[in-house]
Image (tube, rainbow, N blue to C red; front, side):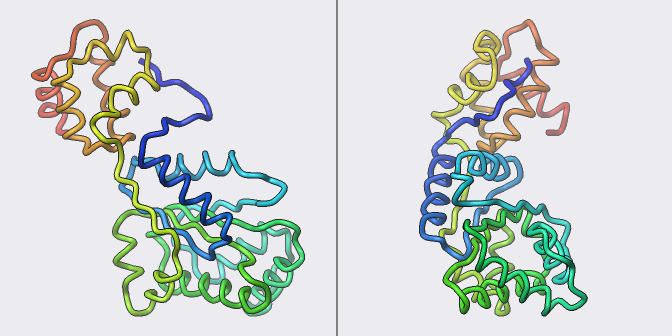
Length: 246
């Protein structure tokens, strides 16, 4: 019943396409890239896998996860990550960051997870730093936003629409397709366990989870804990969903 532990992730179609698009953005040194998807769809796993696969001599990654920092808090975080002294003024700190980025021998990638928690002012500051860096030297760094689908509406607001236009590629991860479900489960579990789940039961699980990998894994874990020995039918799954209000 225990999931496999390791650094590999199941390469479902959406995941592969997202990796290819991120790789394209990196090679083009795009200023911004955008990854949208529901919770559990694999956005953070995608960032981790991508981080482990790039050439560290050419690219360096800074990772920041949500919590809606103020513009100055973001600038301080970036300065700290680049091992720079903290300046009293945000203007001075930003200028030092840009000066440093011009001298480093690698292309910086800033992964911002849960970007939907960022406020408009901080997002505008990120855009401002990028534009200032662009005037000094083309595309000194790439920002990859990873967020819930609702983040799109925020970027489409009048203040942030210029940032939306600069995001390329714009990646949507929706999850597994039904034909990938069995292979997905075989990847994470002992096949002797997953064969206990009937095709009809799997269809119910897929429909209820909307193909979102994280939801599927959580559901299967709970299901196999409650029914470790018996065959799992469609009726069992339906009753389990109803009883647990999943």
